Image (cartoon, rainbow, N blue to C red):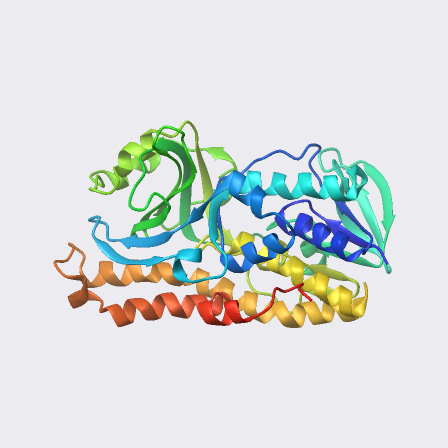
Length: 414
């Protein structure tokens, strides 16, 4: 019972590792010719870290990332709105990690090759479609040249937000959904701030800055990953933007002029980046089904979401573990896909919509509306109970309730 996996990103590699542990035959097809550590910073939440620990990757994660200690929200004037501990510091049985996405992908890839052999992943090969139950059509993504076919029992589409297989499954869907925000992202050698392991958000939806360390710099400072968000004017043609377009300081730095706070000099951090990239903030509309016979969607192909609440990569890993569990229980067949979808789809659809509504970052917008010029006492603007409710509400949607997670077994445990 062979499982064909289209895409060697975080979802596809996590599925491959999970199936290998169960002794289920699989093949991963990755469109790029060489897997490289590309990407920017991400956060890995405790529920996903637990699954990676179960896969034997704890020491690898500590080598490539930092154990996050805190999340903090600030007004556009740099005033603290809300802070709470994260990961192990918050009482979870597992840490949260801040790390580079590309390094996480390479950790998964190298581990899979080490355990399953180099034949487990075929690079330079995309799955362009399928026939029957199941023959996957293989092509060179750059030239379109046919590369033959592969036979299997299931085909899992882990080919990202612009999934070719999703397009075949959902006719007429069109481009990704854009809500009006452009993001500029960079990595800067900068100072430690607050705990030295803090994820910070400042501003409001239309002008927001996110920053967190993903490594120590070896000299008492940090390697900071940052994101600057701006809402663009109506009529802005985001589709003309390349997905990895080089960003220009003049396009966004003026919006953060004066954001030199006692905890971080934001303009200085922005100017210190060696490279800046520009992306549209996009997601995909929730789907009524992730399945078409023996084919199913996973990860960003199923539920691409705004990078709010730090859940995208984590949910890809959880998808993989849930599907592997279903295959262990039911075999590599459509019954397993049905169980997987029933466990995941509605929860992920709710999370996509929660992130589209700003998720836990909504707290910034509320404070900015109530106190546009700052405040003397946050309690008079947004009482603690209200701030706590935003944090707790999002944790429940994302499956991150501390007591519930700690009391539950690992997805693929036992």
